Length: 61
Image 1 (tube, rainbow, N blue to C red):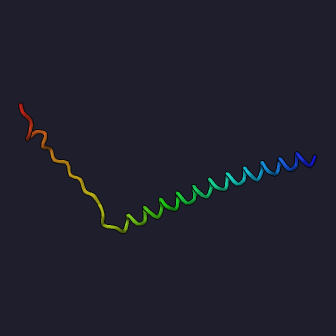
Image 2 (image 1 turned 30 degrees about the horizontal axis):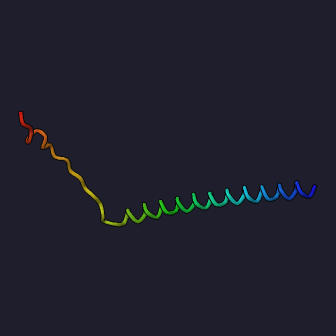
Image 3 (image 1 turned 135 degrees about the vertical axis):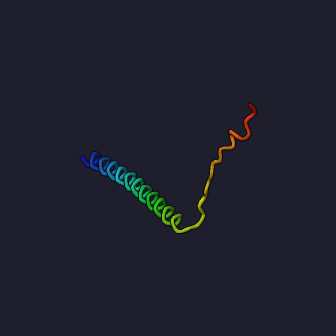
């Protein structure tokens, strides 16, 4: 009886620990994404790409 309670408690503690670790990782990932989004809103490091239609000018027909 005591052995089954010990094994059950070890399994439960292990499962709770694993779920807790993944929950913390998901929280930290979400926090990092929000931090990156907020920092990119305030920075002026924007990239602008313009596409010219040089295809018609440089074609060899």
